[in-house]
Length: 360
Image 1: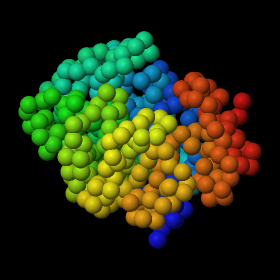
Image 2: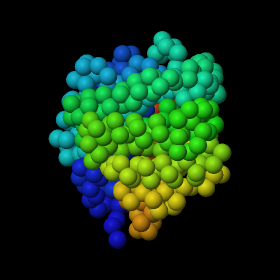
Image 3: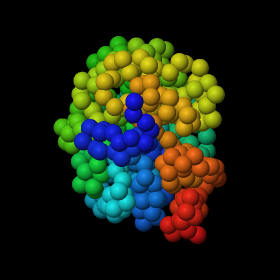
């Protein structure tokens, strides 16, 4: 049976191990969503991962309502990503851009625009630091435009040197808002039945595949439980056929972020759907959330997962793969510096050798 440290082919991407770096929003880009030089060091430090999945990267101004997150819709953004991808490749790594449309979670104070969603709803948890507005329901033209934006961002990602892209279909963002009956109140061909609610995701993925190929296209889903106000009354009825549709499209890999009852960053009593999804998705399946080394090894050995994505552990452990391989102690991360500007809590965590890049 394969181990966590064995190589794996993820579509057209050859990964040197089965440890993926999960997407982690860090807020180190400019106010115009242009990557900065400090991000070159950050991603290069973590090139030991089999594949790095970048932080959420906006497909358009309308879709990116998070301050200082990067984008992939302007030439300046594309040029600024090029030294990041080059640094990862020079260090022997692979890197995939997570392309992101936030839907109703895009803050108007960032975009200057009314958000777009599957239906005219407003995200909960409205507060000064998250000033959400009521979204307008997407017209058919809006749907086509959003799907084109995913495709355009994917094309830009390849031009910037990325090895592939991952559509962000999880955590209550636009694709998730179409998938779930708690946020999708439509009565047309994009709403109602699970088959109809899957349609937007399927067409967006197909549009990306048409640009960059199935072997360089992935997606992330979060099938069990409520996330950022998005929920579904019967998640198995929509996410299992969604996974089957993705398998039929031939994508490189599917990543699932699955909440657990005892989670430290979101919880859910809704059973994990990965065993059901494993029955219909025959391509590489990557699991994520609250994994220890022992649990990761067990799920790979059993065949439930083909790889494991670690998120927060990569924040403070740039050489996480080597630490897991050697059984070394993991450094705890500092939540206070997750989203703050500058190098503190970003590129100053030392490796086992005590080395940092651009340490303060």
